[in-house]
Amino acid sequence: MRIIDAKVIVTCPGRNFVTLKITTDEGVTGLGDATLNGRELAVVSYLRDHVCPLLIGRDPARIEDIWQYLYRGAYWRRGPVTMTAIAAVDTALWDIKGKYAGMPVYQLLGGRSRDGVTVYGHANGESIPEVLDEVARYVELGYKAVRVQAGVPGLASTYGVSADKMFYEPADARRPTENTWSTPQYLRMVPELFAAVRERFGPDLHVLHDVHHRLTPIEAARLGASLEEYHPFWLEDPVPAELQEGFRLIRQQTTTPIAVGEVFNSIWDCQRLITEQLIDYIRTTVVHAGGITHLRRIFDLAALHHVRTGSHGATDLSPVCMSAALHVDLAVPNFGIQEYMRHSTLTDEVFPHGYRFEDGYLHPSEEPGLGVEIDEELAGRYPYDPAYLPVNRLTDGSMHNW
Ligand code: EZ4
Ligand code: CO
Image (cartoon, rainbow, N blue to C red; front, side, top):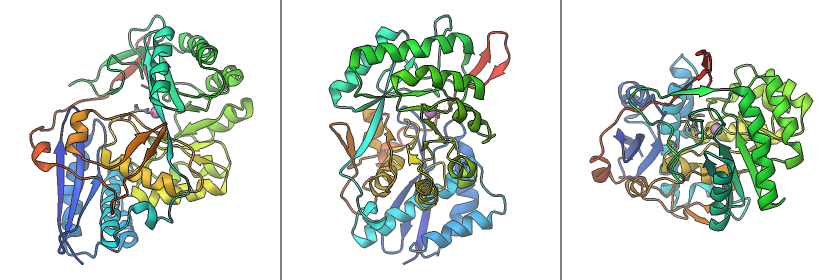
């Protein structure tokens, strides 16, 4: 079998998605997500100009060899653009292998380790009572786990809070929206939010929260300690992780579980965090961490060190990535939880897929491969529309993490 075509498809059914489609001489096709929110066209060029020409004529069955060829062969290793491009190729090749074998991809990864994939949804609101009503909506839908994000009193807008509740979309403007940030006001609000959620929903619901990289280690330690009595499922991205050492300080001060990794691209970004047990959940995902092949490597390292998985699953990760993530989630021994932000109906129409939500769990498709396709005709009707993620400034105007 040989690869005869590798095509990059850019579409914007409400938000931008980049998809790689690989075709073999036997007419088997595979898809890989290549979406890098706010920087999409860099990956498009990396694939179109530098990777697709190298794929033609290769044996698509040699997934590991092609991964190594693209990783080592670039000379310039790692980084979000490179690793997203490699991920797209890798994911498409797993899709092809599954179709060729006549099996869903999770079977090729060792078969199911569980009945379904526990997912968490996003409840958000400007005020705490508004968030509680949103949590109720998710509980009603059957979710066992919910992430809670509330507006910070005194600040005009905050990460994680949006008007469109079910389809949160932060990349919302042609120029980055400017948000304002105040750590003291935020640190007062979050324990109040958790107290209110526990009071209304009791002890069983899994409650998560995303700090989105906006604290220092000592601030995160204080927040983690102040939430312990409400036993959060996890505190996500408490600090930026370029300095992996920073997590040790948090760890020494609180038993609140820590999750990090949605912006990581490789095992090297989390090696120390995992081997020194400085985190509880690793959030790397298929599209931004080198595909199924590399993600599996990260998750295996994590399994050795009592770290469980909690892959990123925001709306900017396409249904192709979500399908791939579910196959990995179903198979790995150390699965923890999967983020699941629903895609819009239009996105689901552009990417017809067989995975389904039922009673708090997602179930991957049983079709051969990943069980997701792209309607190219429909995709073609929605051309690329540039959109940026917001930026954050402190009240005095200093740039901060968004
Ligand atoms: O801000 O995916 O946990 N989820 C998140 C997301 C990220 C977006 C960035 O593109 O942090 O909402
Ligand atoms: Co996050």
